[in-house]
Length: 257
Image: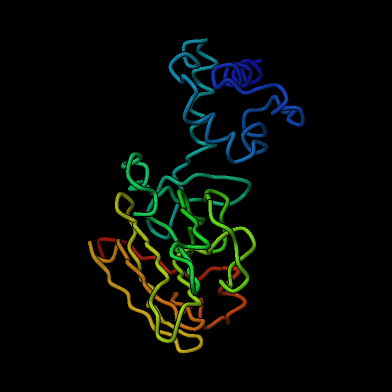
């Protein structure tokens, strides 16, 4: 009953509409959160009055600890524990610097862009709020856009972009010979991680440059060509197709190493 009561209270507090939950029949808290679509999961986390939930009863208050462990458990990452978001069997690292500056122009932090000839703005742009991480290897999956948003620009095949998003930590441009029109940013400030991967540019008449700061927690990436890209050496080594789709291509390390 405590689980069912808690879930119903969370639904009410977060203002979730019945039609959004038609297919969700779980009364168990972990099952419930595991079935929520990402955008609703974020609404539950951000809009629920957890103090009110905890005040329901001692049983509901104990369930609050379960909810926290379901959503943001302390996960063993190699030899340390790190709070990660657990979502459908995968773990996601919150990009806290993005959350710390919610009024900032989103394309300042954790974005990937593509540009092409004759267009004065990006034709493909994706901003990442969370990235998928493997706790055992500290590799980031650059093609997981579960917690990312794209647009509002049109998509072009000449960008070499996925149909729905640009992969993380990658630029692409079909602009001109030796162009560096593509842009990307990785910002891990506020997390215990830094970037270990080295970067590379490739393609037709490609060019690229990358600059690290804040002890390799921040990366500014430029690249392109006719057509060309800049990305991690791991991504490029796996081929252009794999690079476009993404994979375990960005290696992190501890920021204090």
